[in-house]
Length: 443
Image 1 (cartoon, helix red, strand yellow):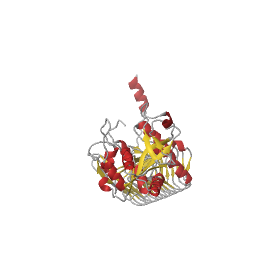
Image 2 (cartoon, helix red, strand yellow):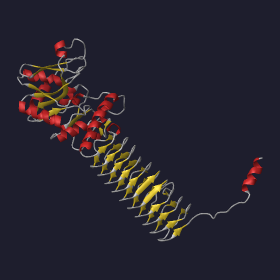
Image 3 (cartoon, helix red, strand yellow):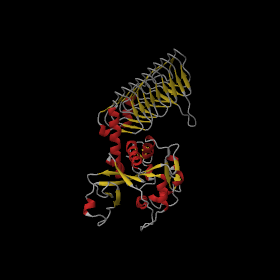
Image 4 (spheres, helix red, strand yellow):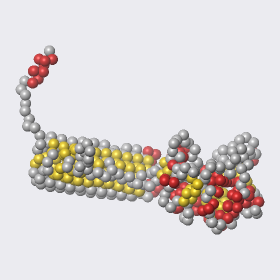
């Protein structure tokens, strides 16, 4: 990956790679999930609650990695081994693998896939009874015969094992290779030596073979994962106008009859209600959007919109911005850590920070809350049915009572009582003949 970040922590549609097989295992009903980490424990802080971590002290191969977790394996367990960099393994695939394994009584069942182009993959050779005889690697010329190369069934590297048989076979592994590593597939001949059968289950989804070794692989897998996410939303009643340009994270929830316009990015713990409209080129991160709300070409991060709220175009809602029912944040409006009451409107060109706005107020163009004094943030309180005129600056802490008004161009530093008009500006004076004076100076 050429990265300071561990490979399995690179994000894929809102989750680190390692979280995908963990999620699949849990959805498949796994009683326990064990992640094998290295001695630096770089994964531990990024794993979901309840996941057990086993430590492989030295990177001595996949067999040694599984051996590091044997203290978590009981003899009667069915043990599924998968990889942290193969994220497209779904719960259905793991469930089918376990069912096939337990029905067969085999010591091990290999998950295989049939590929149109199996180049580079180990071929699965079966005997006359359909049992796995061996896996033939094909990495270098001469590894396999032409007949073996013609086999389209390949090893995915995912297995189901009988717990007791796995532990016995792991104890007998030997590093018979130049790298001095212990390979997990080498347990299979050990099990056959003990008279146990090795089965194979063909995955219905060939994408289980797609591992990630670099960022090109990550992009390829992301395209498949994203398509699946978008298709699931569309089949649940969401209109995605251009699925190829919609980037929606795996954890996002979207209600029926909502429309996602082209170019949208919807990330994190975002929920969108029913019959909402997310306009073109909108970014929504960790936000809650209510039923019937509309967001047009805007950026929301940590915001909440109640039913019928309207945002944009070109608005920026930062963490803690809350628009209650029917509220509006219009063109070039920025809001942070503020509550905007039901039916209140901030139509354009305004910054509202650390503010509580009542219901049915209207903040005129270029209304700005000066909430920061250089050391501390202060709150502004704006009541119900307040009208601020254009170019009003509210120097916090300050309160505008219900039904208050401000004059255009005012810098309000004192509270404005309910029903009052606050004006804070110099009186205008005109200097006659000013243009002629300037002209004479420039000659």
